[in-house]
Image (cartoon, rainbow, N blue to C red; front, top):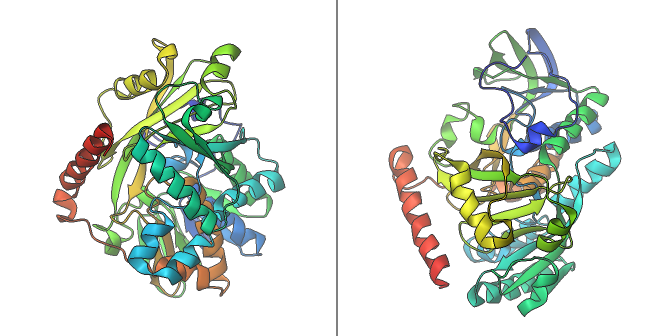
Length: 429
């Protein structure tokens, strides 16, 4: 039985999750080669890659597998990073852009490899769209296509003018860019499937086991309420839920939440009307909307950001107007599920990879682009722990910038900046 506050949020994903046993809490001492803290996408990706390489792996999870963003997100397989390669190139140089660009489309392939290799049932569907709300955004999509093609993505299709209507039954847009290498899936079932795969390779997972303190050294000792782990190396993969375990990074990231609703199941004709080819969609606004159909023909619709991670008073009240603006034909549709998910935001919107010392590694801060990048992170962590550090270090070399105003003022200042961009989106400038 889950402890209060650690059960999965009452989401569509939790209600439709594949059967999965509750793992026991850690009691007493356990020894391992690598201890991974956090059983979300980053932690499970790292643990599974390490187990495949023959490492003895233990995963500690404070709540349930997929409790955080990995089990609550929009389920969209979107390539690249929250800041794209043109921004990386202008800020950090062509060498860094090339290194990160070479990995920008790898995360989606890792996900598909995992699903195929371990036969994970997670409603995988192909293709995602970026939808332009105005001509300025459409111009940006043309540039976006050229940029991604320069870095090797040859699976892009520009849908100018009303051509996008073959994909989206909405009058809201002026065009779209289709990435055939993207897609969408049931994220909680994906991470649960990877947990089962890890255990099939001898990995051990302990739920309801928060890490209360870390004694750094060789080996590292991780303390929990009823036991401890002695590990040669440690991977910190709790993202927005690290709770003081990395004080040196506090102030250099900020929790933020996004809201999601799921409708009642739609009849086949309505589903065909709104999303004829069953692809995932996100618009091009700064505070974007995103949506897709579930495996049982529900519309999963998300949008909005609450900085600091606070939930709005009414999630449905926030999302329903967005949903009905996009699809007026769904006005009054019944909402069966509504929830929030917390992710970790960085100031430069680029992920934070690094080392705390010689044997403690971390990866976090995907800034809303975590589904694909977290799976890439897991592979890179496994590589660096096996002595292949070049690709991990390409990310670790990016600066971890403090938010202006520190922990006190970062939320209001970021909210003010988001308001500015919301106004720009509304004006189409």
